[in-house]
Length: 93
Image (tube, rainbow, N blue to C red):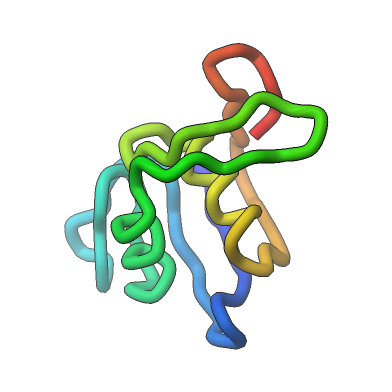
C-alpha cells in the first residue's frame, strides 16, 4: 500500500492505494481518500494511458500500479510514499 499526494486542477488531494478503506471520505476499487482524486479514477476507469517509450496501461481501479500510472498522467503528483508496485509486465508504474 502507498500514498499519493498531489493536485487535480489546483485542488490538493491525498489518497491511499492498495486496498479500500471504508472510513475514508471516498473509496473506489483500491483507491481511498480525497473525493476529487477517487472520482477521477472512477470516471476514467477503462481508459488507456499512453506513455512515451512504454507500454500503454488500461486504468483499472482494482490494480494499484494502473491507478498510480493514471494519477501521474492526469494529475500533478507531488509525492508518492510507500511500496510502489510494478505493472504486471514488470514495467515501473
